[in-house]
Length: 315
Ligand code: AHR
Image 1: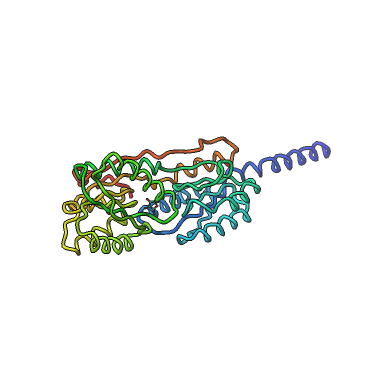
Image 2 (image 1 turned 120 degrees about the vertical axis):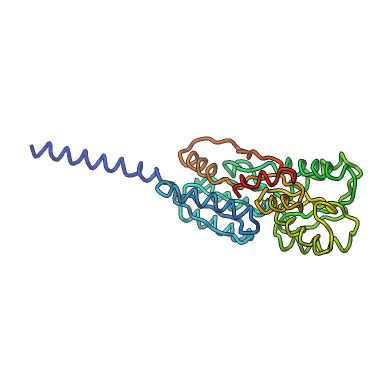
């Protein structure tokens, strides 16, 4: 009797020992190194990630870091996540270059990296996947829209995103490539507005003084063009009429401006990446293979349908 009790106890202990790691593996610890809060788009992305983690708190432990638009802060956050031993690391790289060393550290620690919304210029084996948009395609679509609005001719200006960011580099490349098909459209000036409304306004003010004959503004994001719209109005001109606008993102603010007849077109870029991010993190934590690029599906929205589209916008 005593012997069978002892065997039973050993069996119970074994079962507990086996069950414990399974229960722990059901909850993953994910570090996310966000860029900052430079735009409405960025806030929507942060919200999507944080709210998904909060809704799934039984299975997700999110460690979130705001890099305040500094690469150094994002690198330090990734180093902390490595020291903590998280299961997966997500990062939206503020700029494309300079990630190789810290991604190598993560790889050596066996922690997969998910690039979310922006690319990093590193060898493919240093990250597991990129979840996000085709920024080159967005730039090309923006150029086609600008050419349509201008009947293929006129002088325009470009408000670029953060210097060195993949979203800025590729939206510029795609736009300028496509514009080669419209030789009568000339970009007379191109300058960074750092993806912020305040700088977008400031740069547009100086463009308007130097180039009074411009008829279009292309912004790498909506926030900068929303700032430019303020500058255009303060200069006594009508945005969307005297100066056509094309920008990228699809935030509510630009839909409101389009519905009010003050902006022309936005090329959508989806920030609601929380669900995809965590689904992918779970797969990676379980050792599964994932696609190298998980591409977002996006549309193009114009002034003509903005009032109708506005109530359906989620960010
Ligand atoms: O990386 C995506 C870009 O970053 C968005 O277009 C811009 O608004 C944001 O800051």
